[in-house]
Length: 208
Image 1 (cartoon, rainbow, N blue to C red):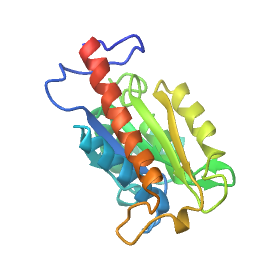
Image 2: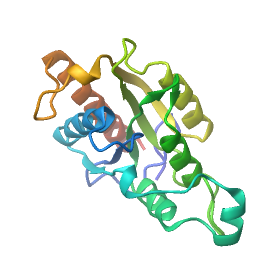
Image 3: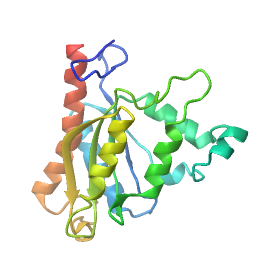
Image 4: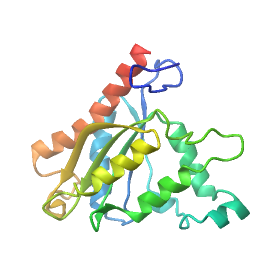
C-alpha cells in the first residue's frame, strides 16, 4: 500500500498501531542519548505506537570492511538490525556528537544495514521510512552540529527525516535519577518527538 505525498511506503493497512524502532548511537551503558531516546519512545507509545528499543551495544559489529563482506557475507548482527529496521515504519534516533560528527558506532551500524544481500532490493530497510533525530550532549550546543550530518546521510539513503528535532544541552545535568528530564518543558518536548512520529505515520497510512 502506498503512503501519502511524501512517497512513504506503509506495508499493510494501519489497522494495527504504527511500529517504531528506537535506538541511540552510543555504546555507553549510562549513555545520555539512550536516556533521551527512551523518553521519546515513551511519547510514541503514549500516542499509540508500538515501539521497539534496541541497544547497539547488544548488536556488536566489526568496522565495515568490503573484503569481510565479500568473504563472509553480512555479520549475523547486521542481518538482525536490518530485519528490525525492515519490520518498523519509523525510526527514533539519538546520536551523540563526537568531534562535531555523529558517532562512529552509529555510522558503522547504518553502513552495514545499507548493504544489500542477494535478491534484496538496495536500501531495503531505509527506503520510505520516517525518522526523527535528537541528540544529548554535555556541551552548550546539545549535539546540534552532528544532526545535520546525520540528517544528510539518512536523506541520501532515502529515509524521510522530519524537521522536528531536539538538541539537549548540558545533558549530564538534565536527567533525574529515574531517567526523566528535570525540566518539564524539555520532558514534554522529548516525548513530543515520539508522538509526532507516531502521528505522522498514522496520517500517512490513513491517506494511502
